[in-house]
Length: 125
Image (cartoon, one colour):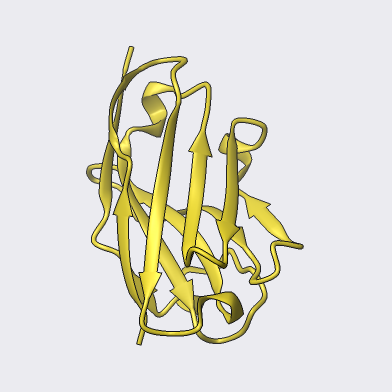
């Protein structure tokens, strides 16, 4: 079992930055892949970013490339999502996810079997 707790969400103006954190507990963090997803009102939950256990591989959805950076600190059992140049379209609940199916990063929602409770990010225009 892996427990995930997100933090760092909030209200920010367009062009601003936020850093989301995801604290994990319950299982060896360094051997699991991590991802961030988001869900806007009335929309499906979508992939945002993913990172392998070793941090060697990262993936991003096209709309956040160059603006968001995913990282992890295995010593602190924490994953991060640095979000810069935020746009109103980034407004959503952001979820941290963990995959016990292997250490490689994945963009597929079905590969993640542990989820946090979500943190709200609101970007005003």
